[in-house]
Structure formats: structure tokens, C-alpha cells
Image (cartoon, rainbow, N blue to C red):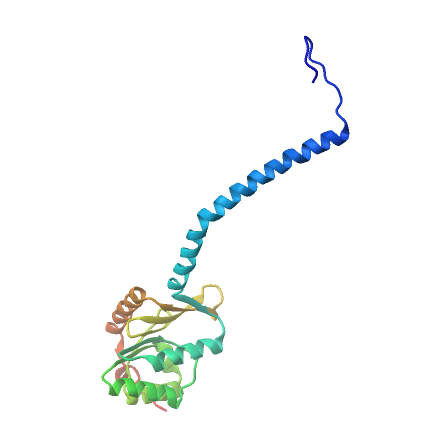
Length: 211
């Protein structure tokens, strides 16, 4: 604009206009860069502490591969020191083997608490009944419930592995969750004890089903 009694405008050369526009944007970018630098400094400590906290919260993992599920179950069974509590029903993730019987016997001989509640569907298979008889002979205390809520293993009141069956696909697929959290494990132990109390002892439940 040209100053005077009447405001008038005159054209500015393209070079000057572009230079002014670039200078204005450069100033804006410089200001944005300074603000971003200050914000990064403010967030750096929060980010660092968050990374430290992350490892402490990694107490839940999802096991999707069947072979890894069997490996994790066997590992938990072998590492149990005081207590091994199991809810189970067919199909089983692992076949009965000497290692499983040995782990059961080891814990039972040491005075540990080894208990399993089987779903009543196991009684339809005489071969499974024979397998369970071998675990009972190794020291497992077994009972039978009409239905168990899910497959579950809890050791020493500290760690748990359980399978949540897909409500649509039913037995065809499940989400297997491993948890290292004493409070949740304690809750699962309480649920196990409630099922145990209303279940039928193995000798009574399995009478007449032997091969």
C-alpha cells in the first residue's frame, strides 16, 4: 500500500514477493522447530520411565502355536515346586509320557499338592481312563466334574496357563494365555478349589470304565 489521504496499492515484483513469503515461512518453521525441541525435552523423561515400566508389566503372553503351548505346559509342570492344579478335558495338548508321570511323582513324593479335575467326557474313552489311572498311581489326586470351565494349569499359586475357547468356533480354536501374576493366580486357585469341592473322586467316577 502507498500511504496518503487515499490508500492505494501498487504491485510488488515477483522476486520480492516470493522472497518475503519464503522468509515468513522460514520464521514459522524455525519457531515450530524450537517448540518441537522443547516438547521433545519435556517428553524424554516420560518416555524413558515408560520403557522401564514396560518390562515390569510384561506378565501376560498369548501362546498361539500348539507346539509352543505343549512346551509351555510341560515347562510349568516340570518347574512346579509346591503345587500343580489342573482343569482339563479332551482333546489333550500332550500325550502321556514318562516325563509327565515323573514330574507328578516327583512333586507328590516331595509332599507337593498335585490335583487335577477332569471333565466327565474323559470317561467315554477307556484308554484315557487308563492313562489317568497311571497319573493317580504316580501321586496325582484326581476328581471328575460334569463340566470344567476351561483348560487351566496353575503352579505354586504364582503362574497360570489357561485356554479361552472361541465362542463361535467352540473346540476348533482357542486363545491360550500365560500369566505370571500372583493375584490372578490366587483367584484361579480359588476357582479351582470351588470346582474341586463339588467334583466326584476319581475311583468313584471311573468305576466300571476300565478296559
